[in-house]
Image (cartoon, rainbow, N blue to C red; front, side, top):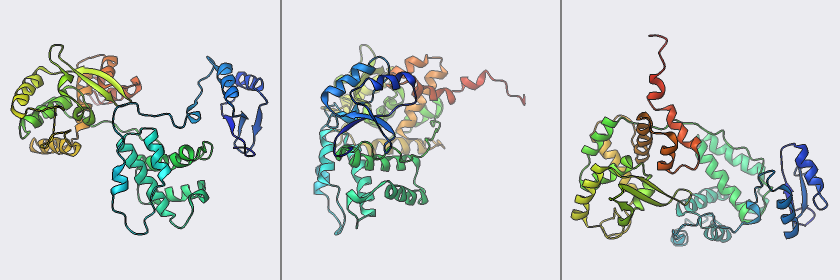
Length: 363
């Protein structure tokens, strides 16, 4: 907003070609306040902008479609927990328009809970202030408090995202928090355990159902949510594949089905008789995520595995063991459902064959 008029801000790295093209746009001006070029925000100007730069630069136009859903899956956005929860007197609630925008954009239920929780923590830190009076300085002061409490980098980033969502998406103020500093990204290596330890974990599960869960997490490289969303017809025993629908990024993919796992799955089906989902709770419906974590951790403890093993550790181990067996990195990327090969390349840092070809200088 400049002089009560909506503008299209154009932020770019110094480039003579881009600068010359901007000069050809309708009445371009420069804002000292926002440190960017701008033109009047009209449908015609937006079209001219895209036509001018098409094939030359990548344009981020997300801010022009604030109500566009970010999630196109069939998952039902459930926000009733928000309205039904018991509230401590004096506790400041998340504004209704914040929740409505999350619903309209079909954010995942886990994201909705995260954003609401973190944003309420922020506004209750400034319980005596009106939201519209809070600025970048107040946000930085709040982040400093969290840093002094030893909050992790991922925690701080989630806090920033929840606050930015209110001002930039709910209120439509895209230029306000460009300069908020984010923690430096951490690069942590994935935890990987050996094949022998995987087998021992499988052997130390409590029952056939638990055994099948661990086998699919490892043998198919599934995320926990992907495992819980599996339905009976997702198991393709003829092609020895598993169909994963609506995975991270709303992407479908196929992954491997182990022969050993298939044998146990057939026995499991006869014994447990699931109706809709492959793994269901006692009263039917999708199995709980917490139960999967406990199954893996208890089996790992019984097996005497020293590392902290989670369901995702089994997925990391699946990818690393494939790489150690000389499976092509691109094939592993497809099996894991990674959008970028850079994400898959992290396993080259933990695969043993990366180091076997290097002679130790001590030897």
